[in-house]
Image 1 (tube, one colour):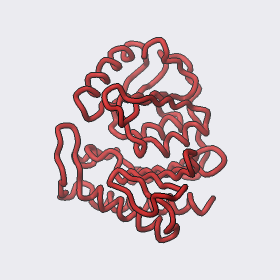
Image 2 (cartoon, one colour):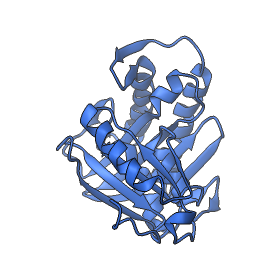
Image 3 (spheres, one colour):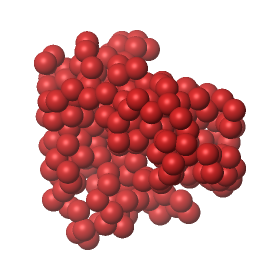
Amino acid sequence: MSPELELAMAAAREAGSLLRKNFEADLHVNEMHDHDIKLALDVESQKLIETKILKTFPDHAIYGEEGIAGDQTSETQWIVDPIDGTVNFFFGLPHFCVSIAMRQGDELKIGAIYDPMLDEMFAVDFEGSATRNGQLIRPSDREKLSDAVVTIGFSKSQDAIEAGIARYSRIAHRVRKTRMLGSAALAMAYIACGRLDAYIEEQISLWDIAAGRLMLERGGGTVKLATSSSNPNKSSIVSSNGKLDFEDIL
């Protein structure tokens, strides 16, 4: 295991322990939006991760959902989602995670996604396939849409929600089942290990999917990103096990 991945996993576990300790506790809300919630714990979790990374690599950059830190001119950037699934966390739904990726230039190199409630660590290093708790994983072999389980995200703006509903209506009758789980990072990890077959959302940010993208692509899965039709500063995503064909319905 590379020192970078070892650090990412340690930081994710430490942040995950913080989240688990505060699960179903009284939470301080920094911002309450129509379709999103920002917690003080988001900031605390990211600060914990930042401190741990920059103590080891003080010349690296941090790019996270809760802001930036470190040397922003560095070629090496750590991409952090301190709580992916904040709304789930706030309402006591035990489906959320910590996601940390590292890239050099534009190339993703390592990733760690930690689910503190199931104690599952998904990880991928500079080389090789992704793992779950140290065991190799790979996407499913399902090829037919009629056999597939697809998770669809509904983003935070009205335009993105409407686009997601339209997309859902085109897919729902063609697949085995659809699921709306509320964590993009875990959705990607679940495709990477074969629990799900595809994840689609109209509007996501880099920190939502960076670690999961690397895990999925290392296993032969596909991730297609495009500029979101509802927000030019974000991306839409169609990701799958690499065997399904969505072109005729998206």
